[in-house]
Image (cartoon, rainbow, N blue to C red; front, side, top):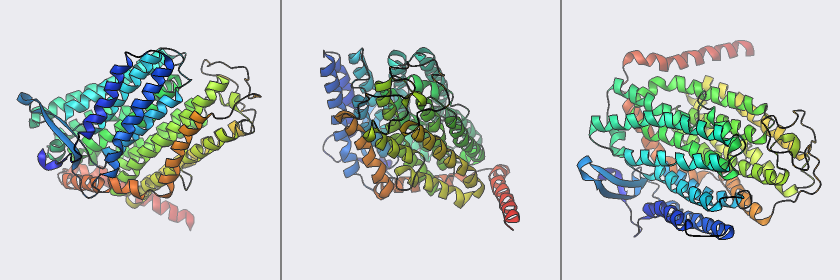
Length: 542
């Protein structure tokens, strides 16, 4: 284990601090009274956690693929089970995304949550600790504990503070993700029985037989595909998003979905490289279906929140597409898209929460013609909408471009098939923007989903809507900085992941040498179809 780690050199255990700060804050919350005190306390704890995570960025060594800021303590010696935490270039960005999104979840809930504020802050802080734990732990048991611990707070967020169909949405979310977790648990136990270790860095370098790899890959992939979620396992997501409060939707979109992509990069690819190569064509096909299916369904929505939820299915399709291209460009693009989706889609859900507080409706037709009344709001909405469909100069453009470059450099057919997804994203986001900023009629009618109330200004005729207050402006302005920073200067973010992604691809190529000859046919099929497609294109061009 030690050869994979660089022990923490900051003089204090930074990763344990990030884990314990929200938990300690949650315990203190139980003794506080008054909504204003609770809100302020929640904001202070999350801001303190974000500030404490900054050395992970400033002191990160870009030239090693080892796990940095590592801490290892004996836990259950008779099982060789240790409390081991550390971050590499893949996980450190996701930890930073988590710590910086959580204060925004408190801010966007300031007036949105009207009841049981003590319990709300408690759940949010426990949630933060669980999510950080998933990204920093270096043994499979800890990973599973945090993976499962995160389910209960998310279930409560939807079930207690959700919309009219919150019971259905929360139970569906819980059952889907729990089903995947059962397969993950079986895989973790099997790995220990086979190797005698729970250490993730050791398991990543272990060479398993081909048949075992296939079993391991399928068990883990099911759990991670549900979490992302990939088509056709995505049906829990729109219901969860629509019924969740704003903070729940932001956490779900910005961080929870990324755990699936992180799991693929941490478990499936390095531990089962030969099986990954065999299953790659099928996963690329499912990714393309997620991109097109998510975009197509988003195009037909009249509920703004449901539209953004289906867009998430499409955007995360680009993430899995990049991962399973199995090249440096694709994986870096997928990693960047995970960060970008967290920023952009989180911001869009905050925008929806802001307008819902004013009009008490999430229907496009009830929230139209806002350009004159809320110019600052629609400016931010425009920026995040442009980012959502990867307009040049915004963060998502860089990530999507890297994924497409990775696709065209390896399988031209896959690249061509992903293009309609990008076009659909532009179509549904521009339609949403046009209807909300200018038009006063959408043509869909009102409240197809059982309604969240028309409010006094139903039908888009608003006369007294106030533009953003200072709290809302600060929240959206903070996210806007990252939209343009990554969009115009992505090098610092790409440099952090560079060495770790390169090392992962090397591990993959080394492990792929053990694929039985009869399974190379799946791999060659993509090349054959791609060549046929190119010949057809040349024929029509001539």
